[in-house]
Image (cartoon, rainbow, N blue to C red; front, side):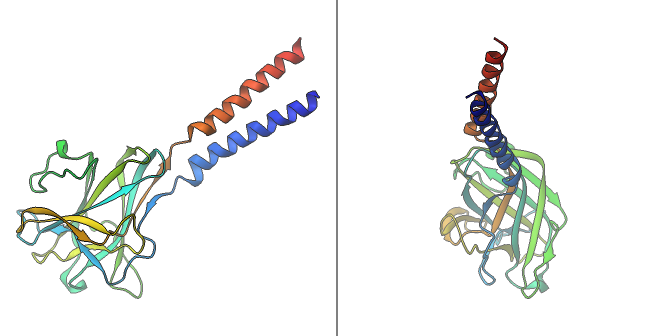
Length: 232
């Protein structure tokens, strides 16, 4: 009887440990994915011409939701220049996260207007994708961002264009949460929905589920009680 009880306790503990390891390790990877199956022809322009901007500047925002509470520490995407590689790449990129679709005007935006913002110099580790005119990009956030599972957030990935034609942007997603994004064009001076979603991924770590921790805690408490019974 005691042997069977002890076996059940051990199994309970092992299941709890396995669940936690699965939550913190195997899911410490792709938290959100619209990059798989990206379009090789569709583009969503999202770039401006620094330092003062231009009427053709386009700022594009896409929404996402995570399956569970998570910490994001890396962003990847596929993109390039819709006008062709002859029009150049980017000299920097800004990644900003928003808690809602109530976006502030992109010119002169301050930290009070977004959830978190990150600015990178250079071409965001631009790597050519063989057989296409597209590139893969990857930035590691200097500080991790904690987000709540099930909530809807928005992301803006904005390139610093090397010319005033502002053709740089993200590839359209092949599989997406929905089929639209929101953009703002400086010359139009308004936010409007537009067809297509952006090909990007969020990388990070999922927070262990409370049920996994409860399973482990229950096993530990049972083991402690069993140990006390053996001593009496």
